[in-house]
Length: 293
Image (cartoon, rainbow, N blue to C red):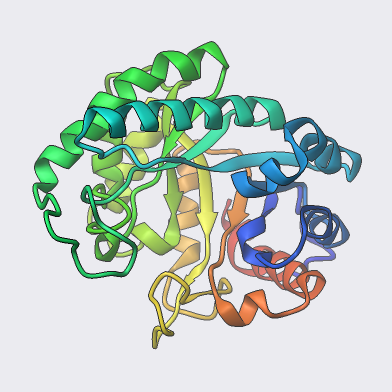
């Protein structure tokens, strides 16, 4: 199915996919490609202010599918806990301000870790304790999210990111952390890049659907060989190894009817014309995802 003939109303361009475009440029690229939504990042909102960022999106006839990101909840010190609560309260307020209920959380790695760096002296290697602190911070933040009618959306990351970015690696773990809270307040994102490998994925998606917790579906492909960093080695849908037909059908059968964000971190794609990138995103969504939703 071509993008011209496909229904792109659920297709969303996560602005990380066109990292070097300004917010107005990214929004216009998504609109020109015929999409219905964009996923925003907090640094872009900060550049314009939430009210202006929301107006930029709405003036283009689009909606905000999600805001990235909150999280980083694993601090072990009193100061770190206070900072995490304060920063995530701001993120919740920003999500409400730009007009989305969905605030994506990357929960954080081991305390003291730095992305793609060796452990610093004194790094706390107790991953079990780190996961427990994630649960504690969710208990702190869920009432604040509920007050603003915003949903905390937990994103499990591939296990290779457990040390430095997210100590939850599977959809099942994210659902277990969500379980104590109302589904309108804490949910999960199914991100194909991070969960495609999981042998329990189908059952976890079915569970997420029963519990009403699927807040977002994000797509991009698993390409090999990796570039200089694994984080920035994602590819356009259809260029790698992920079975989008099967995973999309599982998400569909679980009852998810929301937006589908394409979120790609890739230096080569970032260097491309954002208008062309958005067009490719729409075409790949129409070919590989939309027929199975």
